[in-house]
Length: 404
Ligand code: ATP
Ligand code: MG
Image (cartoon, rainbow, N blue to C red; front, side, top):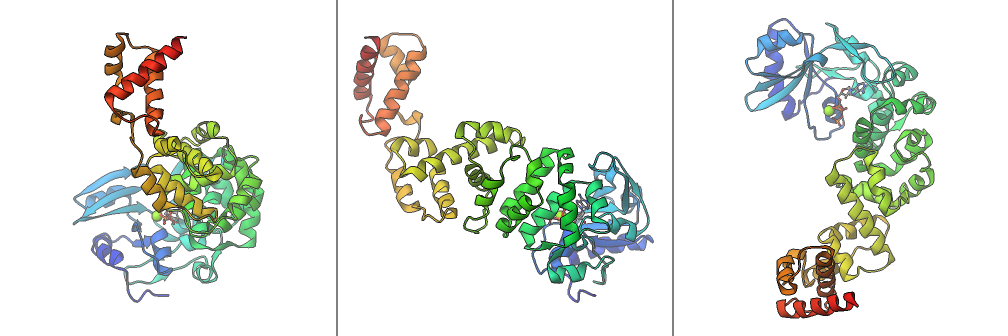
């Protein structure tokens, strides 16, 4: 099969291919971008595979960056564009079901394509648009089938992450596993234990954001892969419920994870521990914890002023999350309620810690924080006007009553 029209991104890269070929080497477009072109989908990164060794690529191009030379990848800067150019390689010596500890560079395209995960990811495209399809990927693409290249059992043994990659392609593409591939995942699911959580997180998050999330989650359960993901050992029921949500795709990672955490019935105070096991950033963790908290508040009824004050703009996100539960979010009402809060942060309170220390002639201590909190809540709940003298008078009453 031949691509009659190359996408713009490929056309721009043709001069790079020509440079390599001029030196007597082969060069092809490979990987996800070829799959996406054949599916008529937009492409993000153009990967080029070549028979030239990294040192040979560096000799051809004047501007290169070593971004993964041990894996054979050189970044070539060409005009305003940049391309990852990777030497054909095999990954022969796999130990303990993870990435290969050694890659060998080879001169044969077929060897390179053989080590790729799924038939639909194992195409190569020549500069004239000819599609090289050694494993029946075109037919699988047409029939929406995800099939491991070669013996699926061996492939998942070599690198167990491929099982999670397969599940995320189910979600992104809406394809189904062929029977043998499915059976091999089911059989080998426990090998996921060997894979770093960071790598699983990336694939699982892509799964959560995919357009066919519900089906992918069902497959995640059916293949038992969930059992080897942190904190999900007993998550079957929660995941099954999650797979019944309104199928609209999530647009933000934190949103997807928060709705998931809610379904897994992770208590709000345990969200941090749960996500720490997934090694996410502190910002990610905080965002999810607040969204889960807000979601649960909101499911019980409309926000109290203090809940709105705590959530701030996140309350608007919570409203969109509700729509996944089949509830209409109240974005307009919430935007208005936020705008009507007397203050949005402690900084807007008419008195600060220094004012209180001066007024009551006392050093800082727990009393100060307690008093500020008391005033803050009073203002947020519109019991006190946010005005200096009024708040100082309220503080005095509070401290007196506290002393009694
Ligand atoms: P995306 O569109 O999300 O980038 P992709 O298929 O391009 O998806 P990449 O991680 O960019 O995924 O990998 C590029 C290519 O490298 C894949 O298409 C596949 O051929 C190969 N590949 C990536 N990871 C693996 C793996 N774990 N095992 C075998 N082949 C892999
Ligand atoms: Mg890619």
